[in-house]
Image (cartoon, rainbow, N blue to C red; front, side, top):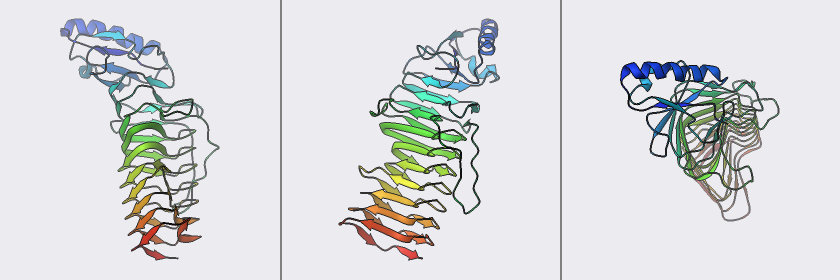
Length: 312
């Protein structure tokens, strides 16, 4: 369901004031925290904006003002559903009150979601010390941002999420299973499940203090995964890359790499191994220090393990 309506178009200011009141009335009449606003008719070529009802109207009066349901078949409430390809932008925090509820459901391919520095925030609270793995309530099905099929098949391809926070969700913060997807500059903190699961690239992001693992991805770079209850970073078993990350103080492995490339990471004081790899894998030029069970673990034949700086 989409807790959203749309206002946009090309009109004189006097008329827009009248329609402003109509749109505002529609927003207030429905118990939803956020609304979708477009600058023209809702189609794949229009940038849309997820906004709160108190967003300044001056931001929305660039054209003819009308109100409509932005994504077909949607209704107010959670999750907010994006069922048309295009660009969307958050202009306020989206607060999900129930740990079993989800924030945003993306069902269309080639969606770009700009969190715009805001957050999708659930009610879950995880606890951890500065050097201890997180302890969270049991995970639920509540997902912050979901772009995944309910049948287990790949989700919509080409989904991009960037520039914001997803925290306190009952389940995973982000769950995106479509090929060619990416997450950039997103903080996934204190969620009951994974911080983020991405069938694609994760860059300049963090998955910390989550109830399961911090980051699952195909390519993970320049990111942090610390103080998670299980592993810090898990690479896709189909072949993944972890480069330039920090993965420390996790309850299991710092980096789990089945058939992957692990290069230039810093991995410190995890409860199990710093890096655990299924061969063939390449583990090169990492710094691995003070992990309880051991520095680097490999299983099967064919791994390349060179130029790593390790200390028990």
